[in-house]
Image 1 (tube, rainbow, N blue to C red):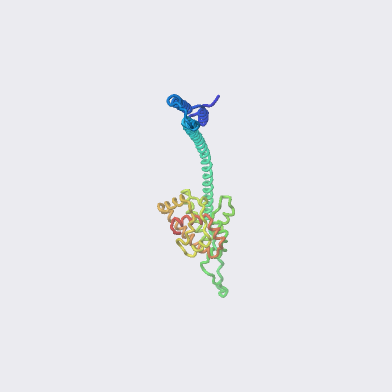
Image 2 (cartoon, rainbow, N blue to C red):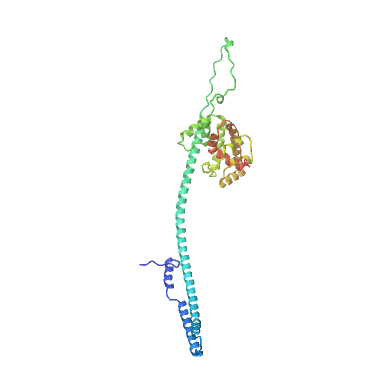
Length: 338
């Protein structure tokens, strides 16, 4: 059983092509005009104007043939042109019908594939958001555990007996645990500013623990954690940003106190949605604005000290951390690089 054909189906166009290949009305009109012209020519030359016996009969015969058959040839040239035009119109109509059918099939296929891709992308985004929430929960848990641990108190040496006044040694007062603690390694400092990638990142958590023992670094980390948490409420995650990385020389100029267009390369965030959301939050949310400015001040102070002894490779590694990306985003919104 043959399937039914729609009005715009290509099969109908092929049927019309076979119909156009037969004898059409154009040929019948050309045949009628040719016969009429030949009949009129015969009446004229044979009945109304019979040929007289004169010289130059060959030339006159040629002229008569041209006068009789030239119009017939012109009639058939016109008929051929009309037939060709009709065939071209039929071909154009069939081609348009085929294109419409292909377009409809493509749109249907695109809608089907688009729905599948949207579901896959939504699942991936949900997984990323869930992983980010787990990381933030782990950081919050770790910070609360740190806050609950009592600080170790220095053990005071027994007071010397009054009988030995000459053996008494004067000790400096106000010495804290931070003063006698070994300085933080730059590798741990950079790793801590990037935060652990997931709850199973043992190396990242170990670096974070060591960094939190250093008071200035701990202040920067907490300021960074606060602003990252606030931005995550608007769906802004540092892992989604792909900034244009600036050269270490530009970062060193920033550490040297330069501001404005000379360090404009530091504002390499090009994500328009993140910039718009952050700018709107800065204008409308006073808590967010205060947290952002506090973070910018901490990062500025920290990086000024870090750049004094850090190499270009370490500066480049630091600029790729989540904390540095937050600084690029907030600094551009706040106009630090204008």
